[in-house]
Amino acid sequence: MSIIRSLFAFDKKQQRGIFVLMILLIIVFSGYIYLKNMPKEPLVIEDSSAYQNKLDSLATIQQRRKDTIYPFNPNYITDYRGYKLGLSVEEIDRLHRFRESGKWINSKKDFQRITQVNDRWLDSISPYFKFPEWVTNPKKSYTSNYTSFKDRKVVAKDINTASQDELKKVYGIGPALSGRIVKERQLLKGFIDISQVRGVYGLTDSTMIQLKKHFYVSPPLNFKKIALNTATEEELLSIPYFDDYLVEKLIEQRTLRDGFKSWDKVLLTSRFPQEKLGLIQLYLTLN
Image (tube, rainbow, N blue to C red; front, side, top):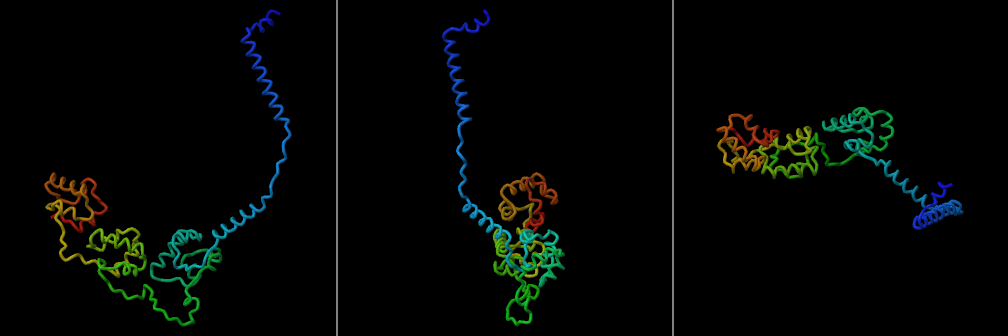
C-alpha cells in the first residue's frame, strides 16, 4: 500500500505537468478517432475524354512523323540515313565503295546485288526508291547538259589558284569540305605539296585520289627550303607548323648539340609535332 501511495508522492509542479500531458494525450487520441471515422467525400472524376483525344492525336502525329519515309535516291544514302533505314555497317560500306568507283545504281535489283540486303528489307524500303526519270523511262528522249563524273574531261589546274566552286566539281567535295581546303590554303599561305591537302578534316583517301586528277601544286618560284642548323628565329617562325615555344626549344637544342646531325635528334625536342614531320621536312633541311 505504501508503494502505491509513493507513486502519487509528487509535488504540485509535477502534478500539473502530468495533468497537462494527460490532456494532450486525450486531445491527440480524440483527433485520431475523429479523423478515422470522418465520412469521406466521394471522388468525382471529370470527363477527360477531350484531353485524352488531344493526347492520342498528338501521339499519332508524332508516330507518323517518325515512321514516314519520303522517296529518295538510293545512290545518295549517307551513313546516318543508312543507319536509320536499318542497313548494317557492311551493307553501307559496300554501297559507298561501289559509288566511289564512279558507278550508279539504277534499280532495286542492282541495289540488292551490290549491298547484299535481304529480301525482307528490300520489299519494305524499295517502294521508296526514286530514280531519275531517264532511268525509269529510258524510251523518252531527254536533253540534258549533265555529264557524269566518270565522263567529264579532266583539266588539271594548280590548286593554289582554284576557287571554291572549282574544288566542288571534284566528286566527294561539297561546300563544307571545299571551304576547309581554301581555309587551310590561306593558313599555309599556299600549298607547296599536294600532301598538305590530305590533312584537311573530312578528306578521305578516295576523294584525295579524285582531287589529284584535277589539281596539282606548283610551289612559288622563290621558294627555298630553310637549313635548320643555320636558320634564324624569324626564318623558323615562318614555317606554318611552328610556334614561339617550339622555335625557342629548337634553337636551344641546336646550340646544346652543336647542330642537329639527324632528324631523330630533332624529334627529341620538347613538344615537337612528330606526326607532322613529313610536312615539316617540306620546309626544312638539316644542311
